Amino acid sequence: MSLIGSLNAAVGGMDAQAFALSSISDNVANSQTVGFKQTDTAFSDYVTQSSATFHSPGAVVALPEYTNSVQGTISQVSNPTALAISGSGFFPVQLPTSATTFSPQQYYTRTGDFTTNNAGNLVNSTGYVLDGWPATNVTGTAFNTNALGPIEISQAPSPPVPTSNITLAANLPATPPVGTTSYSSNVPINDASGNAQTVNMTWSQATAAGPVSATNVVSATNPVIPNQWDLTLASGGTTTGPLQVAFGTTPATAGMITSITAAPTDPAGTAPAVQTTGSPATVNMTLNFGFGPQNIALDLGQFGSSSGVTQFAGTDYAVASQTQNGSTQGNYSSVSIQSTGNVVINYDNGATKTIAQIPLANFASPDSLQQQSGQAFTATLASGPANVVTAGTGGTGTMVVGAEEGSNVDIATQFTQMIVAQRAYTANSKVVTTANSMLQDALNMIQG
Image (cartoon, rainbow, N blue to C red; front, side, top):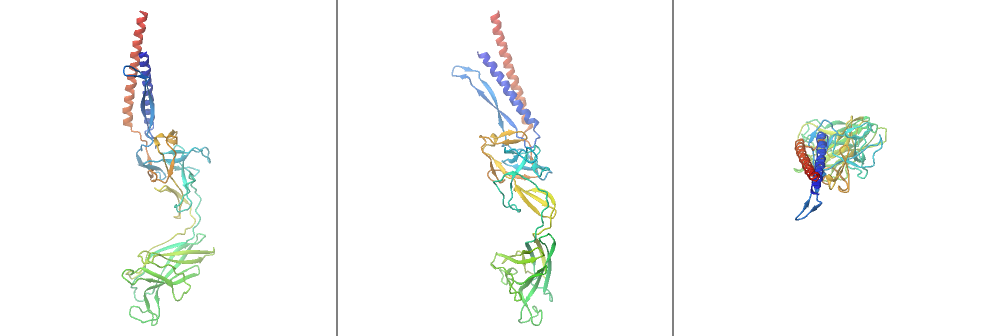
């Protein structure tokens, strides 16, 4: 009985080592597969009978030991839409069943070599399409987290955007040259059709009847009011202002805007209602280029702040920057992914549009996920449900753009385990040979 048990145990050992070798061969074959997770082997013994005075040979069984939570090496690649995860987490993906339909099964993967296919989806080398949350605004500040689905990249042109905001940063000279009483500059904007228009901005030194001196004379009857400028905006036949912009006269406010009021010549001026330190210094204008009223806010900075428009030392009007948020129609240029997971379409007119955010999925026991073809996984009872969150939250790692995660297989370790499995298999075969020889000796005794 013990010889038969020895044979069974040895055969079981050979089967277990063959199982281990199959995992090793799979690991070695996929040592260069992007996002592949190796499978190790754990051995467990089965005891049939054991006591203080007797032990019967049992058996050994080989069980897979998954390493889904072990990260591979991250390498930068030339593909701008490739993604890797530094830390834990998985990309939620779906498997297409046709050009426009997908399997209802939710899959997860670490294989992030995504490229855009002809349907506008981000798909990896194994055919899985990347899921994301659709954006609810073009700036990418809000997403519908209840609508996880395949990301669709449209190459349709972007419509023109009428200018609604102009931001100006400039410095008016505190002591203009004698005889210089005004400065002008033009700001290019766009109307509702995308046509280029211009806002002419004129700064004139404020004047009023009063005493004349050598430094403030403009004319015999109109001297300059120190630290005050009249701002007039003109475009499309519409004039806004003049508005009287006053700059501080104390050490704490010198050179900073302290108030904006309607100039005496424009009692209906659109001066800001709130003028406390730190509040926006914004002038509103309404223009019409044949497409109805177009409201534009001119941002001059903040009251009591050195940002925006100032009046510091200098002899000329110096514009540091002037920007506006309008644009012409734009044609699709490219798609880019930010480290936050935001998917952004770029247009040739400089406009951008955020269409989705890529979240990451985390599991209580990622090593208990069920492996699927193509380096994908599905959730199981043992792994727990997916917790889909923004990258870098909920225990997930960070997203690395333009990078791929390689296989976590270490070839040297696999070769070592291969040698061990081979020797163990040979040793078990020797047990079979020895037990067989002993059984043959027993049979020879009966025949003799």
